[in-house]
Length: 239
Image (tube, rainbow, N blue to C red):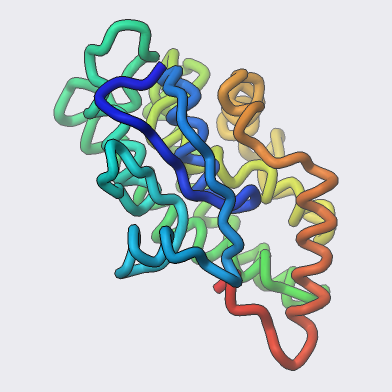
């Protein structure tokens, strides 16, 4: 279902940020046209729709672009708030809970991702060991946040997937792929039981399953990226 005009989503199949938009649209039951972007040969539509950052995702609603993944999620939540047949809200009504959800979504991008990206880009055992040690404190912080925010329920948002769940959950298959190559286990259930259980709940939701890339395909893609990264001219599309 779509309300208030045609929806298009510009994304890339392996982009965790585009996955966020797919999950949100799926949870809301909104139909849309998906346009796959080649991030090394960006289309005029993408460049014109997001002239500042020139990145995916871009949600085009009735001809008007909405850019940046967390902004897209909040837009989807607000634009279809109270609409019949759409899913539960991604952000709570309570102002304090609303601010908390936004804080942890931003933490995922500003702290967790910046640390995890070093593991993602590591090509030697030494680099991986150092990068893994640097990202673990960010996961420890997220574990404490999850235990407090979820109040013993399945998600950051409680009974239903919320903004913070999508922000972190969009990286889950990527985390699995990097773990496979690096020989690590970032979301270790013994060390981070809340996040590990939350990840299982998140990945069991149909809208998430539909949005996530296939593990083997992503693994091969990542191995190709690492091979290029080890060459003198590293690809710019993964900065």
